[in-house]
Amino acid sequence: MRLSPYQKVLLESVYSKEEKQSPTEIYRQFNHIMRLSGREQVSHKTLSELVSELELYGYVEVERKGRGRGKGVTFYISPTGSVERKTLLDALKDLVV
Image (tube, rainbow, N blue to C red; front, side):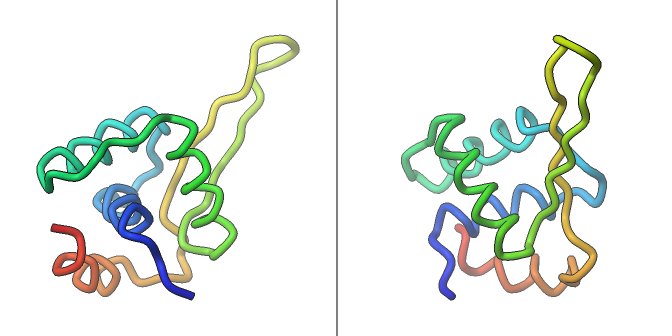
């Protein structure tokens, strides 16, 4: 399995903090990194698809919490415990920028 450059940047965004983050926080940080590296930014839908793929691979966990009837769902994205955070960030440092 080979990760795309977008997935690598997304992993960098998720693993930069130890706690869970909202998709909006991840989106802002992701597009900030993309701007700095001179790459094209992505839409919310594309980022959502990338998060789904990384959840399937076991790199991130997505927590969905209902807010009651008719009030919608809140999402949180966090690193999984199965991947060592420091090792992954060190491996991604050279590849992202």
